[in-house]
Image (cartoon, helix red, strand yellow):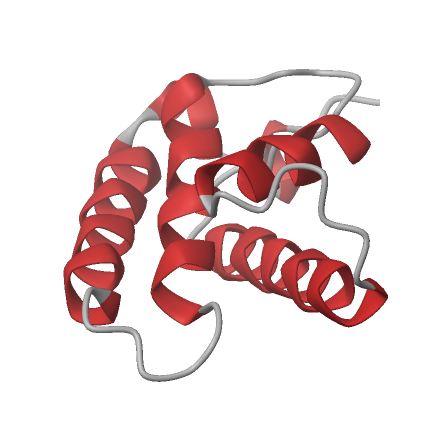
Length: 104
């Protein structure tokens, strides 16, 4: 997950930041974004599998929408996240397999 956290930190212009409070907030937001994508049926990105660029971009949009307080662009980034989530949920390539699709 370190690579994804670094990408998000760069997108938030926090590269090189050492404040554990800020890093913790970013990590929590990344986890929340991945959880929300999973609820929509989208496979969340991992560091071992870079996955689809659009999935990673959705995580960045979610984090940008929810990071800090009094963000004038929060609605814009939230709308971008929601749109990408819809696109990804409709894409068979990024969907989580259902119980019926898993073969043993």
